[in-house]
Amino acid sequence: MNFLLYLINNVLSQPIFIIGLVVILGMLAEKKSWDKILPSTIKAIIGFTMINIGGQTLGGALLPLQLMISKIFGVDAQNMTDIGAAQAESLASIGTEMALIFAVGFLINILLARLTPLKFVHLSPHVSFFFAGMIAALLKFNTQLDFIPLVLLGAVILGLYMTLSCAYVNVFIKPVKGADGFTLAHSSSTGLVVASILGKIFGNKNSDLENLKLSKKLNFLREMTIALTLVMTLLFFCLGLFAGNDWMMEEVSGGKDIVVFSITKGVEFGMWITVIITGVRMMLAEIIPAFHGIAGKFIPNAKPGLDIPLLFPNYPTSVIVGFLCSLVSGLIGMLILGAVNYPVIVFPALIPTFFTGAITAIFGNAHGGTRGAIIGSLTNGFLLIFGQALLLPLVASYAPIMRILSETDYCVYGPILGFFLKAVGGGF
Image 1 (cartoon, rainbow, N blue to C red):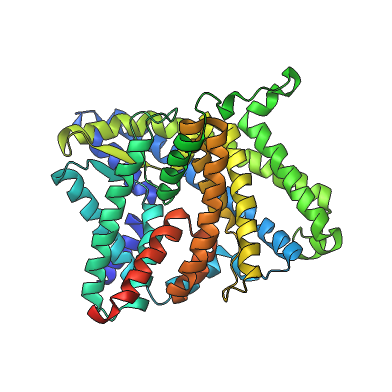
Image 2 (tube, helix red, strand yellow):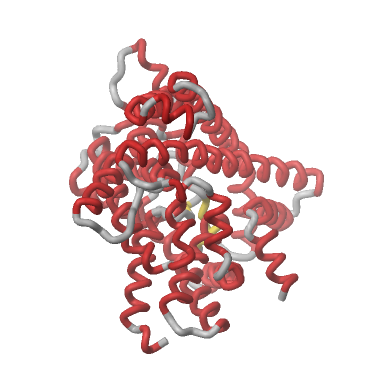
């Protein structure tokens, strides 16, 4: 058992091994020689690592904003900024169940892709690993299930989620630029569906946010690296002014004044988005052809589910607008919860706000143009904040990591599953 848990926690939960294995198996199925397989595998792994580390570092760069916003609004966010401490605290009582649910759930996803018409393989293990933790927490703290039934039920739920979320996102991904050959495997799937539907109903597909007219002298803002650098510099600076320079230097910036700190953070943000874009190009060039080799041999007509940053390069304006809209609606939701004296302090989780806000704006724009992007990402922010408010009381010791990483699917499916388990708790 110890070796199995080691394998799950240290190998299977690491995306680079899954990505590398896909490339190797796909190229072996196509009868490629080792001198072709090795460089392709390395390039795919390096490309994914650039995306993954870039995304994690982008998320980490946002965490100081939580302290600044908490100071401005008088909300205690001190316990929401240390991912390592939150993860250690969250996994203390559910680590074993989480690991086994993750591993068995992935096998169920593979079996469903092989045996049913739902030919989708979820290739974002870093996403499903933490979703397995939420399932484990909901089952452990809201039922009386013993260890083995808990793991088996959790794995079935996870396997179905991994398969079905890829499947219904695939329905809405068709008009999205740059999504040929894959669907998305990410815990923003409910937000994508909502943004797409709202975009269709209230939007205007002919008014593409990415075609926003700019003066020729401002055309440089169409480049994501430049635009994000400037927007994040301005955001840090404006919030820093409201928080106060002295407080900033003492609590957040390590002695740097607001101007220096804001420019530093903006450039850091721009640098890491550039790393992500480069990684996207490297990984897609290797993973899609290799996966088709697997599909042809083992799971005919299968489609890989991949992570959302793959779509960011084609939608630079939507990424920025989506983040800002989701942040605004999240803050409005926070104020509403405070005004009604909601018993749990809830604060917008900025890492999910950035990534799910960006991708919901992309889907909203693809289905409903500028209005679709704005409406979809604003709605996403409300889903995040109100869903988190409902979820936190249900997951007990898993709450610290949910305060930082709870994306849209956690905030939608988590409360639904939790309240269902409470309603039928006597049957478990």
